[in-house]
Every structure is written in structure tokens, then in C-alpha cells.
Amino acid sequence: MVIKVKKIGRFHVLTDTLLQHRFSHEQLAGLALEGGADTIQFRQKIGTTREMIQTTGPMQALCRRAGVPLIVNDRLDVAIASLADGIHLGQEDFPIPLARKILGEKTIIGGSASTLDEAHKCLLEGVDYVGFGPVFTTTSKEDAGPASGLGLLKQVVQEIPLPIIAIGGITQENIIQVMQTGAYGIAVISAVCCQKDPREATRIFRSILESGHHA
Image (cartoon, rainbow, N blue to C red):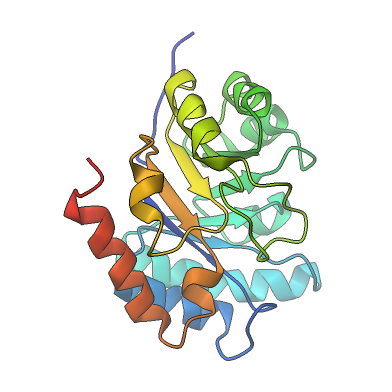
């Protein structure tokens, strides 16, 4: 089996307007980009398709200017309409092989996994990266399962020959522990979006990632 690995970012910021109401998706994307995020993911579970397309259009323009990919969570139609660079799909979302057939090989496709078996399934279905978690207990995602812990994350990293993006309860205090498992990168929601200064929160995360203290 030949694994084709695209250029995947190490620091994914998922924008959110449910946990906080001070910033729009577009504003959060702009602040995260200024702080050093190298992937922006639009995640919204409510609202009309038209509203989502109207939201992701300006976000894509921001990301294009910054040279950073915009990934849409779950919604294949919104990803297509907004010319997003990729899509992230959960275990119960649009089938990954069919998404690949529709979107083509150049599009980034990420898959969610919370167990080793799910991570293997993502690999076999042809994702470009696996979002694994929740590593720690999180309140950012209502559909998140129990925390998987660092031990299982390390096992996934060792067995799955793809970039593993850790997600779920990741903070500035535990990011070094997460990266010491060998994870390729991290994804955060509230640790950036719900902070007083999302730009500064992003900058600190980026600084820790680049410090090499976890190597």
C-alpha cells in the first residue's frame, strides 16, 4: 500500500461561535492566522447551508492570502462551495472513500478516530491525516467520547503511518506531554477561541510547538 502524505499543518485551530460569542468565525480565523496557526478548520453544527457558505467564503480568502489551508468539518457541500482546501470527516459523517472520489486526490481529507481500530479504518479509507482524541476530557465537543489518554495516543502514533493530530482538552500546560508521544501536531478549539486574546493564545501554542522541548 503506497501512502501519499500531503503537506499537513501541525497546529490546527477550529473556529467556534457556540462556546463564545465575541468573535465571528472569520475574526477567529484572522486572529489565529496572525498568531501562527498553520491550518484553520471551520466547524459549525447548526445553521443553514447558505449561511455556512457565506461564512466560509471570506475565511477561505483570508487563508489563501496567508498560504494556510482551510478545512471544513463534516459538510462536503460547504467545502465544495467555498473552494476549501480540505474536509474533516467523523466516523458517522460522509463516507471518506466517496468524498475522495468527489473531491479528488489534491484535496486534504482528515478523519476522526477515538480508538486504534478507528484510526486503522481511517488509514485504509485513504485519509491524509488522523485527528485522534479526545486525548483529555473536553467540553468543547458535545459528541466527544471518553478521554483516550496519552498511552493510546502514543500507540496510534506508532502504528498508523500518517500524521496524527491530537485533539481534545489540549492546553498550554499539557501540550509538551502530548507532543512527547510523537504526535505530528495538535488541534484546539476553546484553548484559542475562548481566550481573552485568541491571537496571543495561538502565538504561545506556536512558540511551544517550535521550541523543541518535546523532542
